[in-house]
Image (tube, rainbow, N blue to C red; front, top):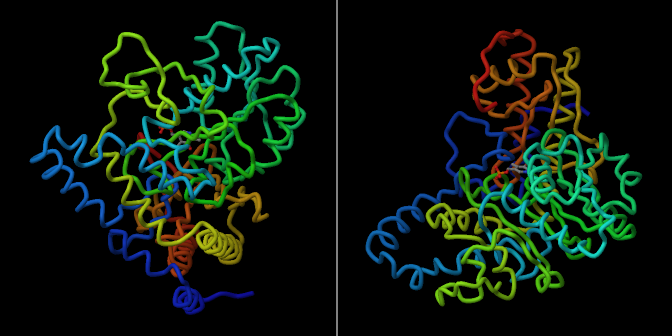
Length: 414
Ligand SMILES: *Cc1c(COP(=O)(O)O)cnc(C)c1O
């Protein structure tokens, strides 16, 4: 099949989601393919920030904990997020960072294994997002009960790595580098067969791919709101604890917001019922408020429609790069199989960092991850088919003209 810019424009004209792009403030002249790292700004976030700062904080001051719903915001946002991941109301709070929530979930998962002292291993992937590994190792070391972290090299090797010694299978649903998507239901079932508990990190899948946490019988999950959910830079993350585990969910960061009655100021900690026990301390209300603006855009569509467009965008990008950049040393590392693909496409190039810098200079914003990986995120809420065409056109020019500086200095954030 051969493609053309006109054909891509026709796809945009027929795209039922095309109008949603209007709800984002994207600078002119930019093709933004990095929503997997920092989602674009919903236009509504500006008016919301102004309202929170001038009215709720400025005029109503401390009353806003009650009158503006600040006190319940972590739960209200969790309920809005729930349908995107197959959770029920009352099972998610938006709070803290992904790393901190992972610590809580993992600690609670290990606590569920307290009566199985032979289970000491946390199984995860060597190519998991490093913070997840660091947090697991930090927790294991701090517990001083002989827990270890087992790093698996490839997804195929995971089943053989789970056994009678396994306490927890801790996986990131969609890999941040390759875009590989695990089969959540199959791996959860496998873990359960061996008596292990699962902790899923949804950082690159919440708002990117449909999933069914309950259908998969997952145990715990955490995720990010500043990536595909467009919550804003450093926006609070989320943690999911299904109802069936809430009674026995104990996490060690037992701050006053997880207390049954925080304002009784009791000296003894007593966890509240429900998902609130996943909370720790006071939340950054300004940042937290903006998360709602991203979620409100999702409420106007559904994950099935988003997934259909995401796959069409990523299929098109792969086909165009392979057709139009043929002869250059670009290699696909993202799975071709739809079931195994997230909403990003990664290609390697021996000078991946330099090529990405050249693309960014020409207005195509993706990012770079070691080793050699150029990462392009596709966010169906605001990425168009014409964007895909234009991005590949510019990539082809950069490669044909060798218009990249192989000695380009590295920025702190790549
Ligand atoms: C982005 C990401 C994180 C980020 O963690 P923070 O604590 O929010 O910085 C964690 N895990 C994975 C898998 C991620 O992709």
